[in-house]
Length: 564
Image (cartoon, rainbow, N blue to C red; front, side, top):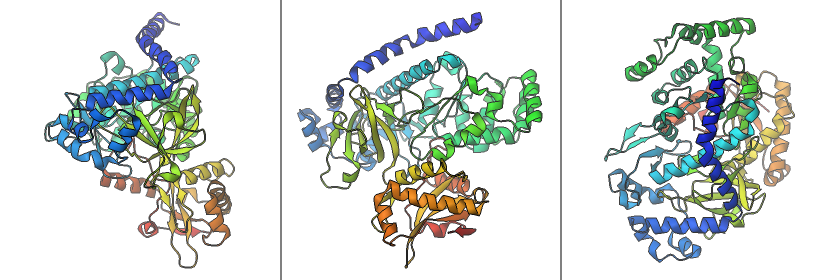
């Protein structure tokens, strides 16, 4: 180990000492989640009692969890939106005891119009603490790969898309945290934070690669693995331009970048002719340039979501990145971090019981007028629940529509994995097919049958004689019709294995067999882009829906042919 490397590692250990202490304390807290959660709830109520929301819901009079549940309903964003609107206009005390709002984090726009989540000092402290504990544990698990204090590739969004009437910035939270990092930490990130301000996706990926391919990258981090797939494809497609820019210390002139951002980037675009020539020779030899060619697999780690509907993209990663360890980022959103994965190779994470008070409603009772509501200490392994966080920054019993499953316990605190957005379901004849059923069935079949599935969605199709479901696949994935029919038969059976009601409706003839609708190449990319344009949001956070319950969806798509 070189002296420089030795000093960097020692510095890293010094900087992470407080976090390692926190991890030890968190381990102790996980042995008694009921007490920790109860204390947190009443601390939140006490601090927020003199806000307008606190007065309207009689926080001062609440002395038990039962009283809290009586005073505050389970509700979506719309319930708290009037209070947030007042905060936007400068009346912070309408919802928050914190004297200032640093920004509003914009939700991804995956499922509806975008929401504004207030980010306060309390929010940021909890958010950073969760990330730090996750990070230290991830580094510990990968000591042998020598990733500490080496550059990270991470794409963030724009921290300031617009401002509220009172001047509070609204934008992407990851972009904001990148912007306010300490200079020493910021130097570890290969991609300049201003890259998040580039609206054109192709230009944003290009810039990220331009500033990364010349560095000894240790981690590739993106909330959505589809970002990593697109990054790899851009690298190969644009390798000649990228290597020329790296060799000459330039940034190609035809990228769709504002003058201000271009000036910032141009001043930092270093020249590395040796590295450019080395990669150029490698690309000529291999006839390609993938991330695994630029950054050796044995020295890298991938950090991304692995649960829910991420399967099709995760299956593409080995082609481009080899097979480095993959660590899930946890259940996190603009609304906050809810879980902390403490080991790699799993989508499960322990509830962050220090940051938020959690309640849960069993999946089957979410539409009940009086559903069962459980605390974290009351969950059972294998159960599926809707998660309802209460936060220190204005969200109370918030129905975020996230469906999770308990996979075990860390101490006595539940480990949960994200299954999907609970509103994503379809119900033609009582089968109540969910996105979770679809993604789990497809993952199981993909492990047995060599059928390419780059991107897809399943939707119901109404037919007077026999309605059915269709899976929409792009033309390049449908070259072998024999294999396609085998895949459809297996997928149909697996859907029944995952959902007994689907199997019953198929057996009774009320549902027909699933069919494939073949759509043009690139159709899903275009569809996702248009959907994001309608709802707003960050492409890096966007989750393509794998189940679309709209009966009219078939009419909106250009179908080249059907495979039955």
